[in-house]
Each structure stands twice: as C-alpha cells, then as structure tokens.
Image 1 (cartoon, one colour):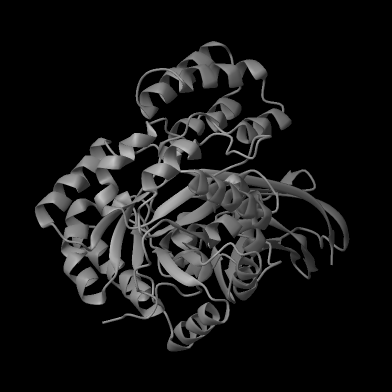
Image 2 (tube, rainbow over the protein chains, first blue to last red):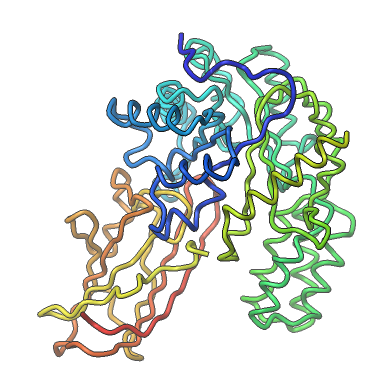
Length: 335
Length: 125
C-alpha cells in the first residue's frame, strides 16, 4: 500500500495550488516545474499541490523511477502535499473514431498507476471516461489506494443528467474509492466581468455582450440558452466569429445554486476553487465564495486555487492565487 | 494567454530552401499530433501551398496530411515544433510578415475544433 503523502489531513478544509493556474508561467518557459513548486512554497500558497499529468510531466502517463524520485524529493524540500493528479479521458485520439470501453479502461490504468507512484491520493478524471469504465477501474483504485474523483465542471453540475448516471453507478458500487471533485464553475452567480472586458478590449460591440448576458441570466440549460443567444445574435446581424467566441460563456459558467453541492458532500474527495478575478472589496467577481466555502467547512481535504483567467489574461498568476487564498482564509475564519 | 500564441518570439530562421518557423502548441497540455492540424500559413501576404510545408517535431518530419495518423507521437507542451516552408526564391534574412493557423481537436472534448491564428513580423535569423 502506498502511504507516502496519502495520509488524510485533519478535519477542515485545507488550501493548495493547482499548477494549471500557472499555465502561463510554465508555458512561457519563465518558470521550470521546480520553480513553480518553489514559488508556491515561498508565497505560502500550498501546502496542497495539484498537477495535470499531461501538462507537467514529459512522457506522461509513463513515470520513470527517476522522475518519481525527483518529484518526491521536491515535494519534501518545499513541504508540499500532493493532493490530486489530473488525468484525461482522451476518447478521440484518432479523429473520427471513439475509443471502446476496453480501450478507455486501458488508457486510464497507467494514469491511475502514475498517481499512485507519485503519491497522489486522488486522480481527477473526466466525464468522457463513462460510468462503466470507472466502475471497472474501481478495484484498481482500491488496490493502489487512489481515489477516483469526477470533476464536475460547467456546463455540468450536481444534478446534470450526465452526473446522475455516475451517481447511480456510485450508489450501486458503493466504493469509498469513487468520489467527486466540485469545480465552482458550475455554481457561478454571473460571467466574470474580467472576461467580458477581454471581449470589449477586442472591439466586441456592447449590444452583443448585453444580449449574451441577458440570455445567460435567463431560463433553460446551457445548450438551450446558447442556441437562443446564437439565433438572436445572428438575427441582429452580429459578426459570426465574434458571436461564436462569446458563446463560450454558456458552457464555461453554470449558474446552479451553491447548495446543489450538498448532496454530493459525503463523497467529495477534492475541490477546484475556480476563480477569475476580484472586485474592489477583494471578493471573487463571479463566484460567491461567501456562500460556497461554509458548505465545505468540515470537508477534510484540499481545495486547489484554480485561476483560469490565464486563458485571456497575462496577469501574474502567483499574485492572483495569493489573493484567492487570502479571501478564502478570511471567509473561513468568519464562519 | 500563452495558449493563444503559436509563433515563438525570434521564431524565424532563413534556410537554403526557404524559412523555418518555430511554433508552440496553443493548449495547456500536451496533445498527440493526430489531434493537431496545420491550417493556413501566409508569408509576406502570400498563402503557402500546404504541399510545400513539412512539420518537424523532435527531429522527425511529417507532411501535413501525415499528422492525422500520428496517434503515438505526443507534442509535449513545452517543446517547439517547426514548420519548414519551401519558397520559390530564397526568402533570405530580413523582416517577414508571418501568419500561422493551428487547428486543435482536443481528444477529450468531442466535436471541438479550436482554431488559433497568430501573426507576427519577425526578422529571420
């Protein structure tokens, strides 16, 4: 059994960083893998450390003994705690042909083994795996002592039909190695103003942004609202490229009630503290952490600060993560 | 915003046959080459015939249609790939206006074709 780094933390929500938030710093080659860990330690934005396998590790999911040894040395050196390894359900590597369940099981096995070898207690998996594939992988997860957590991300949410299929399978299998990773993108109160400003800075007309926001706040699921928006934008003569780009707000940000996570709470294994920017008072601009964090107050695990503004901003991600964690500590202290 | 960039800074080199462009994968993680498609390449206002372009990664070279079959060759997210473009006359050193479009089909998001176009004025080294 792999126990190194797998000890469950004491009660209470703990904070950490996902290196995904530092995508710009890493891809620009300004910071090496070790630099990211060193900065995370120096700024006190650990101790939790989440890694996306296919981003941080060359040759993933193959983990050489040399890399595993170095990884464990770095984690010890910087006093970090591996929390979750992001793995992927790459179902269409050959375009136009979707993997069978057997192929998908085989594709996940080395990724889960990689999590175990590196000392991650959780492997974050994706919808594309399918409930049957995950059911078949549960015994391996148990043998390796790695919990499999489905990332529930917008446009899905706790009660989305795709998630219900997994919930039904979880109820049948009843394994403590199957769980959930809430991503707060599902429970946003609005679209991040910083994202809308990005469109404005590129000359998108205000009327198009207003139309999109009016429909985003309206009734219907994400797909229905997106189709309604596209139809009305086209009818108004909007530029096709602009209207398509802006339509991303429908799948990217869900508007479920934060309390929708409560039903899943007993099987939550990790959290993605998704964020984009802050208002003048230091609160997240689109995600209501005041409502969300108290729900997870007694969850004995980690939340990764997951800044996704790197998609449209070159802001310093280290600084954004510091602000996020300061906000989270303030809210947790007050509840 | 690294994931909206394709052409590297100082990413142009004059070769005996034409030009060599240093490109990066505009995505947050590594992807198999089978999910990468080279779209339009325009140099100094002229659209390049795809038959005159070869894609190079880790010393291996592919014609553009061959990429779709490279299911086992992974473009690691920190690595540069190179587009070797044959031109009629030596492109020579000096400044060139270069535009490259890469289309990605992230294999875990069915139906998504992500188009990234990048344009830079570069001095050939």
